[in-house]
Every structure is written in structure tokens, then in C-alpha cells.
Image (cartoon, one colour):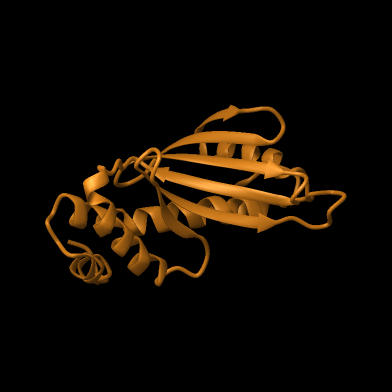
Length: 169
């Protein structure tokens, strides 16, 4: 979605409010957790995603998380760690990690917000954060599928998923 499609103010505002406006513009189900947290449910091409953002005034930071619907068994942790390491080499922004307590894979990106007294974020910044998280999760979801259910090594999975196709079938 292009920023021009939003019919909202372009001014910098509270990060959670800016994300809320973007989620609403995308038509996604949103749940606010006070002034400093928001959760959105998103249907991607491969799976459902939960996007969550938490703003911490003390740290002047916004933590943006995207959870693909993938659960990992503890016996799969070593191969998933290797896969995540190879995937993260491909990323410019954010990173994937495995949360051991829950067995969830998460894409995570943190932003330092300036100026400190305003903690601002523009609609364009919010849109970029959301789209980047979704694009990276969509791009690498097949890698995790190839490793977890396709019997591929992490190297094979990365190679198979990074093939660019030309044209349409």
C-alpha cells in the first residue's frame, strides 16, 4: 500500500497511534493494550501473522514484532537456530529469533524514537515498519517450512526459497 492511499495527517505523532491508523487503513483486526501497545492480526500469503508493537517511553524505543504461525518443538531448536542464522544474514533491517519459552519464531525490529520529548513517528515510518516486517516474514516463511516439514537442510532451504521466478505461469 502506498502512503498516498492514507487519508490521515502526515504529521509525526505517537507511534502506537500511527501504527493504529496504518492497521486500520489496511483493514486489519486491531486490539489496543493501553497507550503503549497494539496488536494486529494479518492474513499473509502463506499464513496468519500477529503483529505487535510496544512503545517504551523510558527507552525512547518502539519494539515491533511479527509472529508467523509457526511453532517449533524443542528437538527442532538446533536446526532452527542454524536456519535463523542463515536467514538473518540476508536481512538489512530487523532479525528473526526463536523464543525458547514458547517455541515461537518471531521477526523483531526496534526503532529509537526522536526527539525524546515527543516520541514521534510519521505515518510513512509506521507504514514502512509494517510492510518491512510482513515482506520479510513472507519471504522467509518457506525457508522454515522447507526445514521443518520438507526435510531440507537450512542451506538447501535458503537456496530453494531465494530463487527468483521470471514472468507468470
